[in-house]
Structure formats: C-alpha cells, structure tokens
Amino acid sequence: MGNPLGRRRFIAGAAATLIGYPLTSKAAPQERRIASLNWAISETLYGLGITPIAAAETASYDLVVGQPRTPATTVDIGLQGAPNFEYIAQLSPDIILIQTWQEALRAPLARCAPVETIGIHTGEGDVYRHACDAVRKIGALTGRVVESETFLAGVEARFASLRKSMQAKPMVPLYLVQMIDDNNLTVFSRGSLFDAALSKLGLVNAWQGEPTLLWGGAVIGIEQLATDPKARIILIDSPGLAPEEALTKSPLWATLPAVRSGRFTRIPSFWGFGALPTTIRFAETIASSLEGIPG
Image 1 (cartoon, rainbow, N blue to C red):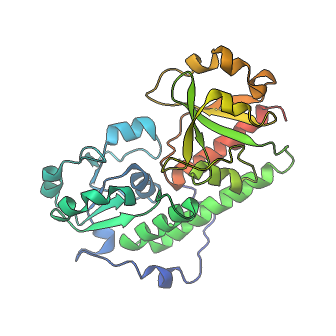
Image 2: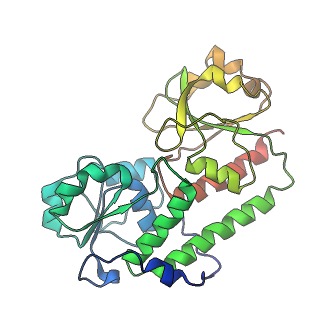
C-alpha cells in the first residue's frame, strides 16, 4: 500500500503519550539500525518510510504481503521463527523488533542487540487498536512521532472516505474466507484485522463464531457458509496453496446460497497476520469489490 499520508493532522499530546516507550540504544532515534523479525512489523516500518537494515523472510514477504515492498538495502536474516543469530550479530543492529508471539526468541536475540516487543496479534483485546499502538511505538522508538501520527490520521481519513462512499449500498453480512483445500476454509472472525476493517466500513461479518486462530479466525468446512443464506461470500486468494478453482468447481461449493444467487466474489491475496498497511489496502479492495455484487 502507498502511504496514506494525505491530510496532515496531528493529534494533540501525542509526544507526551509516547515518551513512555524507552529508547534502549545510545544511537539517535532517527539513526537507529533496526532489524525486524516479523512481517507485520516490517510492513509498518515500510509504511512509515523507515528502512531497517535487516528483516525476516524478505523474498517471501514480497510474494505474500506484497506492499509496501522491502527496500532494496534491507538484507534477509532468515525465518521469522528461526532467524540467523550469527548474521544478526554481525550486522550490529541498535534494536531488534519482534512480535508478542516471538518472545521465545528474546534471550538469544538479546545477545545480539536490545530487543523490543511490538504487540499486534496477541489474541486479546482490540487488534485494530494494537496495530495503531504499534505505529505509535515504532514512531517513538525511531524518533518519528509526528510521522506516525500523520500516518494514523491518513488511515482514519481513508476509512472515513470509504465508509461515506458506501452509505447507499445494502449492508448485507459478509463471509471472509481463504481456501485451505477443496473442503475446508479459513474464515476471518472477530479478533482479525479484516473484521476490524469491515466494522470501520460499516459492514457486518457474517461469521459470529469464536476465533481459534491467533490472527482472528477459524478453520471451517465449506458447508458452514450456508449458515446465513443471505450473506455474501468474499473469497480471498491464498498464495502458496492449491488453486482456488479446486474449491470453486466443487459440487458442494455450487450448492451454497450465496454462490447460487451470484453473491460471491474473489479478491487478490491478503496477509491476514499483517498490520495497518494491509488493513487499509484490504478495506479499499472490499469497498471496490462490493460495487459488482448484487445486494
């Protein structure tokens, strides 16, 4: 996603709120050499115009997440769950950023550089608020408090614009799903950033079950998409898995009420374990896709 940095609006008192995040290096914030061990953190850094010296799984990130792209000067330091500790030490970062679910890596990483945790997908609380707080914390750690607040203001302004443009459309509930195989799907639920995007657009998630996945979702059988026969189905393409045609050509898929009545569409792949840049791109795509779906 291109930076949503349209209208410059600053939130009063932001700097005072953010000073609670300690700087753990002697380097000036704007000069800090950052290593990102997580895709959601990486896309947040890139969205803020920050180039880390290193990031995890950069080629796969560019394939699966896609935007914002990994800067050309950022080197790959291995897997998110199993980074190359020796290489990280050689790079001498000032700070290493991880997500909450990567806390098991803290001890070995701390031997390379100070480690800061950015909590987005924690399985608790408001994930959208966590994603916003992640932007603010990164802004504080890098000396970009103003830029982080401008970024957040741009995201909120874009959501407001999208929501206004959709006010005249019928607000039929939506199932948000990704294919696992020709019988099973991941459905995004409460606790996901995709669900948060629906709420901010004034839309309703048709799946009301409890999440069982850390990023807010559950694994379900295709037949469960018939629970709400009036709902629309949004099929989000799934990179690295079997072609979605194996699902959409199955007899069971064809019997679903939404499919029979044409209330179904496919959209490009999105990384459900991401951060705000992915969330706003997802919202824009949902708003656009609804133009062609009958109410």
